[in-house]
Amino acid sequence: MRPPPRAEVCRRPLPALFLLLLAGCATSPRPQPSTATSPVTLLAAADPGARLAALATQQLGQPYRYGGDSPQGFDCSGLTLYVHQQIGIPVPRTAVLQRQQSAPLDRSELLPGDLVFFTMSPRLLVDHVGIYVGDGRFVHAPRAGSPVRLSRIDEAPYASHFAGGARYWQ
Image (cartoon, rainbow, N blue to C red; front, side):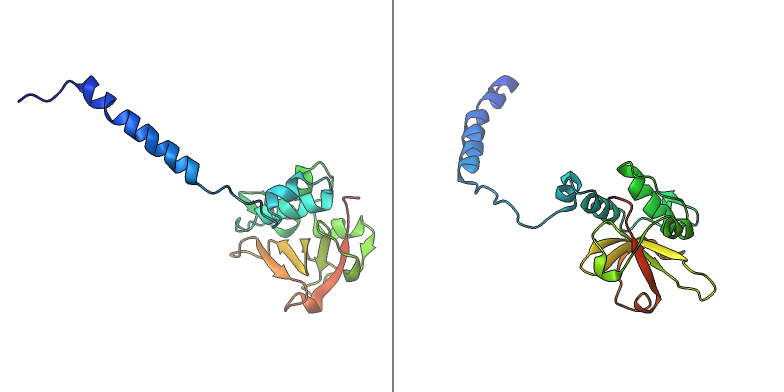
């Protein structure tokens, strides 16, 4: 006995397959809208501060690289520079200049997208910067061997080294 021609084999299962697909679609529940705010939602927001915070969050896990200012590797001020550049806001390259060329903000005035500065070394006025994302958290490129991460301003070692904030996105 000879198998049926190829065209006959292909035609037979299609109606059944089509009906199964339609039945599956008809019984699928509709997705409910999410109330959580995603980085994509924040990027679409008109508020540049929220956009900066979302862009910073997208860089979590990127490698640290001294002098780096791209997703291939960031140092702390390179991360803040890159994120601001993505929405067309000019900022100076170094943490010291970013601090010097901005109006200072107190911790209580911080909004998502603001820069947060730290004095990690007693010899310097400012030697570390990150981007505040809200709820006491900030995104930063901490040091060699440590990727871009999320940290809390009120936890060690940052709590005792906080040097103020700044806003470039007004």
